[in-house]
Length: 238
Image 1 (cartoon, rainbow, N blue to C red):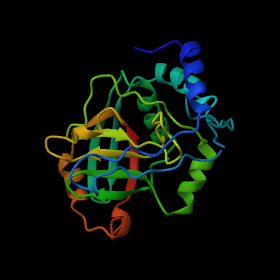
Image 2: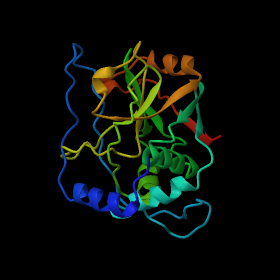
Image 3: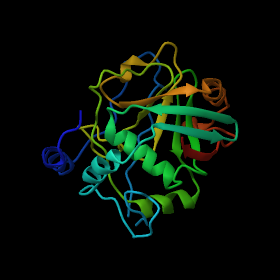
Image 4: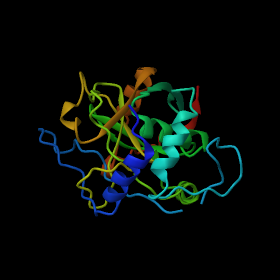
């Protein structure tokens, strides 16, 4: 259920004014099983709520919540197809996790994810995407803006196998604000429930989980980065 922006904005601005901490360490046997910490980003995009107009709009920590509150109300679709160089899969995003859903669809329509990579793969745990060592990705982030998202982990969703969730920022982050540009998908059977409460599940894979599993089996090097790049070729809203 959406809160009115006046109440939520006051709350989130208070959160944004607080320096925030690192991802929680998992209390599980695998030391490797942790979501990569990532930083938030800088400023300048060309888009309105309807994303097609060239208006030099930039998201910030001050305007992001109000923007996504209003943007979510315009959305009639909640599925996104991710096409990679290893195949494609389709996500269904949860309507009652509005800010994360709206953010993901907005970035897909901005073509942010196109040409990014699954840059972190932890076998039998997660695949993490939305980043790249290509300078174009950094430029895209600058154009879209620098902002974080509030956690929304109390809607009853768990980190079941196939769940898409969002990692938190690298910055001091006791409130577990989410870095909006990256995401991870759980491959553990039946799930990775030690992540519940620390990260925000905002959707699930409804088609093509075999492709997610195939990506999860690639050979990786230092930092769990695949030795052979796994590219997101296109993210399209269905």
